Length: 137
Ligand SMILES: CC(C)(COP(=O)(O)OP(=O)(O)OC[C@H]1O[C@@H](n2cnc3c(N)ncnc32)[C@H](O)[C@@H]1OP(=O)(O)O)[C@@H](O)C(=O)NCCC(=O)NCCS
Image (cartoon, rainbow, N blue to C red; front, top):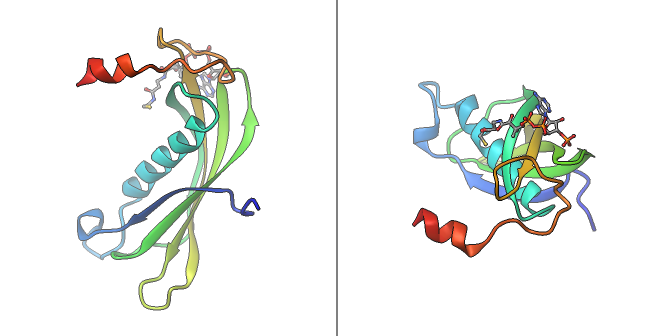
């Protein structure tokens, strides 16, 4: 059954290197997780290169502390030809109580690129090949 908050796409543990001097996690670290989560979700919709074109909204609702498990869930809100608008909901599991708390909400738009690195209908057959990986190694 689908989770009401969306598909589970990422779970990470926050580390001391992620925090500011007060012990809370930098917003930029959470933003990076959101970007990765949006990619993971987009990839399930088409095997293409995906790039972030716009972050429509990001709201830091509550702080995240070091050592907490952070869960990111994704839902497709809207689709275009090459683009997909995705909602990412971020929860933290409080270290000492195990309570799940909503910490961040975001809406982010991803665009599928074809082999020529131009926008492509994301419903197109896969445009990735193992050659792409070999070229990068
Ligand atoms: C994403 C990118 C390829 C779009 O290029 P473009 O020339 O505007 O392409 P198009 O006009 O064909 O638009 C492609 C899609 O992006 C959407 N789009 C483009 N610019 C947008 C913007 N500023 N805001 C929201 N959507 C936008 C279009 O609506 C279109 O969606 P659709 O195909 O579903 O209708 C280009 O802007 C780019 O390369 N941006 C940098 C991406 C990047 O490096 N991201 C950060 C790291 S992943």
